[in-house]
Amino acid sequence: QKEVEQNSGPLSVPEGAIASLNCTYSDRGSQSFFWYRQYSGKSPELIMFIYSNGDKEDGRFTAQLNKASQYVSLLIRDSQPSDSATYLCAVSDYKLSFGAGTTVTVRA
Amino acid sequence: DTAVSQTPKYLVTQMGNDKSIKCEQNLGHDTMYWYKQDSKKFLKIMFSYNNKELIINETVPNRFSPKSPDKAHLNLHINSLELGDSAVYFCASSQATGGAMDTQYFGPGTRLTVL
Image (cartoon, rainbow over all chains, first blue to last red; front, side, top):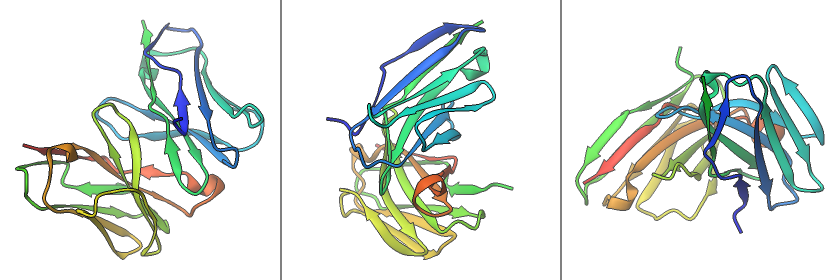
């Protein structure tokens, strides 16, 4: 079983819609959870991190964490073409383990 | 100012050669990392150093040898390059390890192509 699994993409959403990205992890001892965005040919950049159960909002992005279900998600509201990228879920115990990523395409 | 920089950006070489990639961070972070991202975009940690001390060494062939002369620099030397080493190698740094301090900042990547 992979340590971090993300819903397979690609995910195509119309401009202005909500993009929903899901991630599950296997290690119950994981403490911190991160979402990174990676544009094609570029390096990953942090969108947000979360370490408490519940929701965390930052602008158009909302991360949701449910440690009991070992589940973390990212919602992108009012999706823009500039949100088209691969989104990487990362989970931290003693190291950062990344999922394979979900590619999002926002259609204008 | 570039926070995490890597050189070179592109590296094309023949099988069997030895090559090095250099990384520098000016964020004042204590921890630095090397990651490999393969053609399927899967990002996997290779090594981590905390204040010049090796703290993570994943199952990486011993042809790969990291070196950290000081906490701002982490280099990666690869001996006897193989076709399967072709990938993008990212350097990253974080303030420390654990919790929010795990937030990692990535360099621009080095695209290694082995012919």
